[in-house]
Length: 423
Ligand SMILES: [Zn+2]
Image (cartoon, rainbow, N blue to C red; front, side):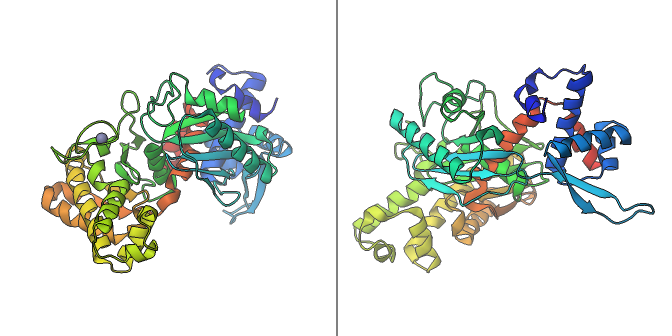
């Protein structure tokens, strides 16, 4: 039996392990440690796994024979022989990342060093409920896998990020795509023939920031996703906060304007209606059509239908007063909402991400300025505020921990590995 067998049956692992089962369990432990730590010596591995050097040497030789582990080279001598470092063979297994938004879907495949194996494929596909949408998506994904000559058996899982309301326990989506009572992981699993793990898009972004971005090694971070809507991912006490059903973080739907515009959610005057990328775009279109002077008009060749957030950000970077003010106004509303979050949650860091991120200081400065006005400075000074360094890649990268956390999660020892690293 190979290590992959344990992934298939990982839920069945029991604390009482003997013989082959125990060996597989040990192999999975080694896999997890080498995935998280990249390289280790045999002696380093013995402590967290809890076996002797001869046992570890034997298991490592088996893992090398099976293609999971490779020798990486030797380190500095600590008095005796130079230690040999071992790591995972990065291309022994892969992770499929799928980022679905209402307007497009992005796909890439990552190796066990979390490196993308190719350029991200973006498919402009509306996330409606037509069965054809999913068949089209499946074909694109299968072609992508084929392009890189990968065997589906070697894909550990697909992490799919989805916008809107997803029930964490049932994986039923209540917004886009809405497939009634059908769980999304089952529907996509049947389509792709790969184990599928679903996560809300902004929560995937927070995981991406937590594993690969500015939130790395931080315990209390708020990740703001400003794009089509306004979402919030919360890392609290080092964990991604879900809430009872996974519906936490609907920050975009706090009321900002009591008699404001109708929001997609059916309520009036939500933060999204004045601060999201789509709100900025709608206002730009309306104002330019009614004669406002701006270089945006020139950038879209006079066709206001072509006004999208990147065009407005581009105009703002070129010094266009109107575009700058639109972004500033969004920042000002976001700051009013963030002030409440800072008072409630006392975060150490706030990361501004999503489609607004390329605006850089044009969005960051008004947020900071207004926060000084709206917050108690003692609490405000704990929270540093940054634009995401991962920018538009954060959500897709976040699908990696969506898959890997699930592979690790049924094994309590993973906590011991973290504790071990801290000591
Ligand atoms: Zn709303």
